Image (tube, rainbow, N blue to C red; front, side, top):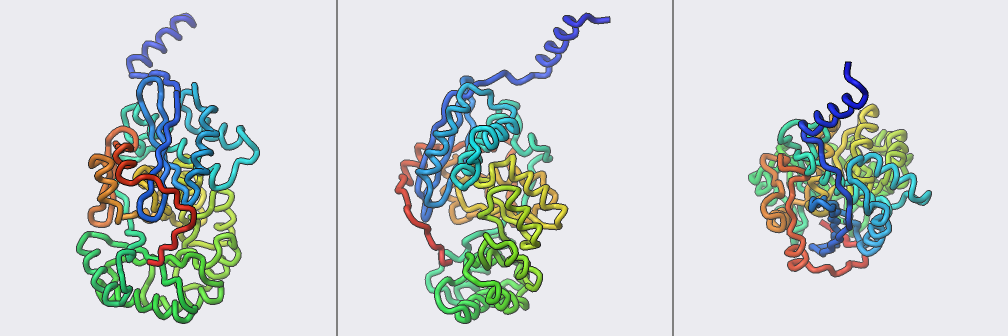
Length: 398
């Protein structure tokens, strides 16, 4: 029989043979800001004493400087800490550092750190983040082209028709665009229906359609709009009325022939519970950058499954956020599809030295490289797209 000392020694030897990860200590945060098209982006690098670095993202529209301050507020509580134990770090940061723990700035800062810690831990173990989460090899996840019609100038039915043909030929199987935001409600409903009809005439039902209403209808007018869309088999109508009103969304969803999607502005599993209890959305849209990172996004998705809700995460930010969201969804049974800012694919491919994944046949395939699988040249990113500090919301009418 082995003595206690022998048991401990043999255990340490076994761990060494298995390649137990070397303890690390976080040494500093580096923050990078750029401005690309209509939004400022904020990125985080968490450095360690071993030279390993984890990447996160804290993009928060019109609030870049505020979220940078949030990251600097968190930084002292992480200096000297081992980055492993991500769940413990999340609970310590969310519950322990302040009772004023919610709000978009605080949650976006925490999200960036959480993503960076997942990237770091996976790199330390030599595996991809999705493998660390429990997914199989190189998962392929469906995506949709968001802000799809932003390049159109005249916004005519013919332009929608032609763009739909081009998009289908490029492999996309789903798109989403923002409805016309100007005009009376009847004018907007007629114009939107004409756009959808043009797409259907071009590609039939080979492309799924999501429509962003940007909270611009009442429950009454949203129902009128949904009924006008019924012949076109629209996949979802996103946030037709105020996201703060789950009861109103529930009332609409109960009568609408088009499934309702919502959730990009919700910040925690508790807020999503209110939406789900009200049956306000068949499709929920949490954002990995605002709900608390990969750790919380997985929990929100799992929590929504018993309600029969599907998950189509909101995402129109930077390359780190896109890949982090996909990694989290790789292990979620009720995942539907991932929002994808495809207009930036070329830029993201260049600033990541070709490590950014690109859609093929309507899906995105995750890399097996360690961590998130991204190599971001932040110096080049900042040189090409210097930070401007956009002070007001950009209304993307297309």
